Structure formats: C-alpha cells, structure tokens
Length: 227
Image 1 (cartoon, rainbow, N blue to C red):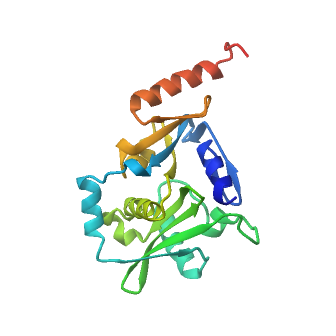
Image 2 (cartoon, rainbow, N blue to C red):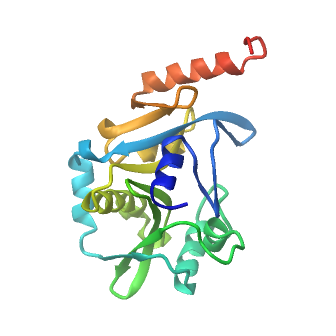
Image 3 (cartoon, helix red, strand yellow):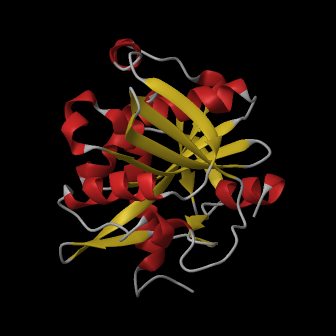
C-alpha cells in the first residue's frame, strides 16, 4: 500500500490499521454510537496561527529526527509509558498497531523522534504516499504532557509533507459529539476538509457541514429510507 495506491485509499476515507486499510462511519464509545468524519488538510492552504507558531517555538529546544520507521525497544518503552497514562483504550504496543504479527510492512512508514538530550521523549509515526502523508500515531513521555507534544508532532508532520511537496495530510477522523478528537483541527482548521462518504466529495470543514452530513447520513441509514 504505497505511492498512488495509498493516495487513492486515503482520498476515499480508507485509513491504515496494522497491515490493512479500513473505513468507518460510526464509532462506539462508552455505550454510545457516534458519527465519524474523515479529515484531510490541504497543505497548499496551511497558515500557522499564533497558537501553532508559539508551540513550534516552545519545543524548538528539543532535537528532531525524521527517519524510516524501525521498531525498537526504546520506542516501545516510551509508548508503553504513554499508553499507561491514557484514560481510553489504545493498542497494546506499537507492534500491534502497525504490524499485527505480520513479518513485513506494506507501507512506507516513517517516525519523527523528539529527544531531550539523548532521551527519547516523543514519537510520531506516519505513512507516505505519492501525494499524501497519513498520520498514524503520536505518543510521548507523560512527564512532558504540558508541552502538547502530540499537537507539536502534527505540525512537524505537516512541515515534512510540505517540504516533500505533498498535497494532503490526513490526520484520521473527527467524532461528532465527542470532543476528545477535536485536536485534529488544531494545525489549521481553515485548510481542513471533511469527506462526504456518500458522494466521495471533500468539503471545506465547518461544523455546519458536519451537521449537514450527519443529517444526510441519518436519512440514508433510517429503516424507512428507500433502498
């Protein structure tokens, strides 16, 4: 799943899970179904505002390296510490998230390593296509929580994608009525688009558009809808 093949999947709302791709229109959290909306960022229109620029400045004291992904014990240890600090379920390990027991990867996967001196404090994993970058996973040492390293990694992924002349950055999906996913709008809401699954069309993001897509989805999914 590389190059233009990955681009096509992402443009249709299919995202990586282990060594496959999936899509969804609803997610189940805490006994309730919520609508999911796939997002992408049009990189040509990204303009970082005051909050984004400040976050870049605050964290510029750390060293950043971007390299092809290799699964190491160091990375797994930081992820395990991060996972144990969460108040929601996540993959048991990075191996489980990316490989799922497979011997080889079908994706072009990279990692952003952030270090405080020699200490690895955060990592951001992403896949690359011919014209796209897909953010897969961000994790960080909980001792550095106040520095918003997850959001910082999103900005670094966007900068990498722009440097390599990609067209889109795909951060995953937003969940309507479940604000824990709203951070995906942080990099640049004005450059963010949302997918209309039924028509395979991308629209400039707004909450009004999301509401419209939700009502349209409800009408189509209703038992009374004409099939």
